[in-house]
Amino acid sequence: MAELAGNFIVALCYMCYLWTVKKFCKAYLDSSRMREWVFLLVLFAGWILQNIMSKYCFFPNIVYDLSGHFLFLGAVVLLFQGTMEKKILASSMLMTVTILVENFCTSCFSSLYLIWLHTQKGISVPFLNEWEMKLIFCISLLTGSLAVYLLSIHPVSCFYGRMKRWHVVLAIPFFMITAVFDVANWGAGYGILVRSGGNLGLYYDQIFSNAGVGILALLSMLAIGFYVLGMDKIYLEQRKSSQYYAQIAAYQMLEEQYSQLERLRHDMKNHIIALGGLLENKEWEKMRSYLKNMEERAGIKTGEEVTGNQVVDALLEQKRKAAEEKDILWECDVQVPKSHCISEFDLCVLFGNILDNALEACERLPYSKAADRKRSFIKIQAKVVKSCFLLEVQNSAEEPYVHGATGRKNSKMHGIGLLNVNDVVNRYNGVMNINFQNAVFTSSILIPINVAGHDSKQAV
Image (cartoon, rainbow, N blue to C red; front, side, top):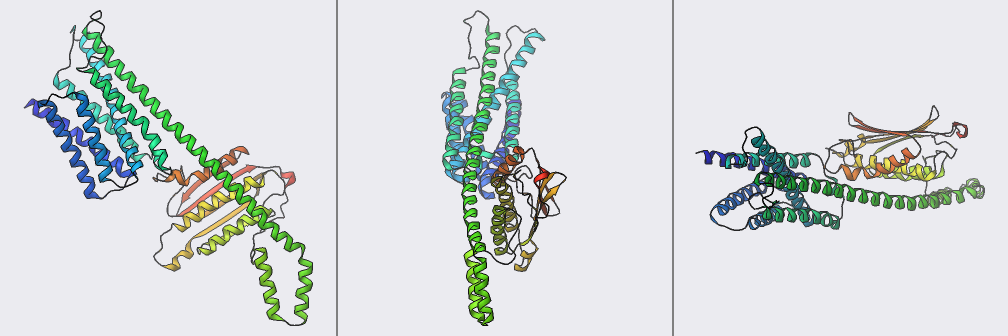
């Protein structure tokens, strides 16, 4: 009865672990409810079969470890949806986190309990009995379950916005660490990994063995943590760099667009003379055609943004057209200081990324009727306030959608643009604040400027 009760408790702990595994896979992969239950049943049945075989079939422990890994990997690949690379990464991460946490906790708890038996109970060579080993295993398994659960509720950025080869590169060290611990556990045998040749005794051999496994697990956790953070840093830097190059290309395009407008303005005197002649002759159709041709050549229409900065004018005009195409109400009141306290390129980074996020948020809003789309809006204000340049963009949104403002799974992807914005703000010793309240998302930026060069008359 005692053995049966112990096995029942271990089974309950393992079921708890499988529930956290399912939650982790569901957080990063797609699956139906039926497949999720099949996933749990397959892994639980495989675990029971593995324990029965280990009791009656005398195979090396590494055989059972490898079979368990292949069963786990196959269940994730077959029963969850997503790219093969992402499923492999999820499987490798789950196996490695579980193995490292369990080995670390088992080693620590075993060492502490052996020391307690030796010092407090006076047992010269203490050993763990079956019940004590099962208890330590249950505690370690529950700790591993907690680690997996935390990973499932706190988004892991490496699963989002990555190319397939990134998932493969990240999965390789996880598999390598798993293999190392499989070999180490196989070599440990009955728990003795370090032998002193009889000089120190069996008690100290157990302590040193458990300490060695614990230190190896701790170092492996630190190594894999730094590796994932380092790869994430490299990826974000590459993304930011590529976006900067894209913004440079957009900046050049806007300059070309505005140069066309400048050429039109340069010829405005001749155009006025031509239009005056058409007016005197009452040639209305020719006048209408002439004006339309001017509008097309300049790429402008009535209501063009005029901020005092040519590049910002062109960018706002482009974003306004995009908003109107999506039936988004556009309201703009922008004053840009004439002084060169903020470079035109950095202004493009600020306005461009924030407005792109605003357009995307408005586009994602659900609408029951086509007329409801008119409720979505983007409101832009920019002016000088107490020796600082203030930029504030408000837009309708269903929920926060930027990194740091929400717990959405894909928040990392939506936050890449704001990383560029934050870099610009920090470069000018400014501050940025984001807020979501009453279905309105607000991005506010405050940057110190040189007031002497500011012309407050330039406004929309």
